[in-house]
Length: 108
Image (cartoon, rainbow, N blue to C red; front, side):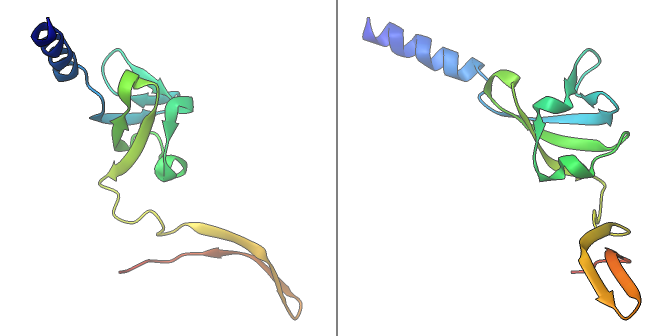
């Protein structure tokens, strides 16, 4: 009886995808991971979520059950900060107030 239970549990764990890597394409309504499935942005998390735009190819980690996806890479994106603008607390220099800084380029 114990061996049968062990076999059932082992088979279940072997067939259950506790976590998996998924490729997708960003669309206006979410991230398309297959012909039939578009994951809504509400189920997407990760620091890169704010940097994706429609057409981007992304790598996602899908958690157990597929209730949450985490963006781990924007494929082909070399530098997400190049040409970005950073909003800052206002700095007043004479008659000039600076409220943002545009990043021209970033290197390592």
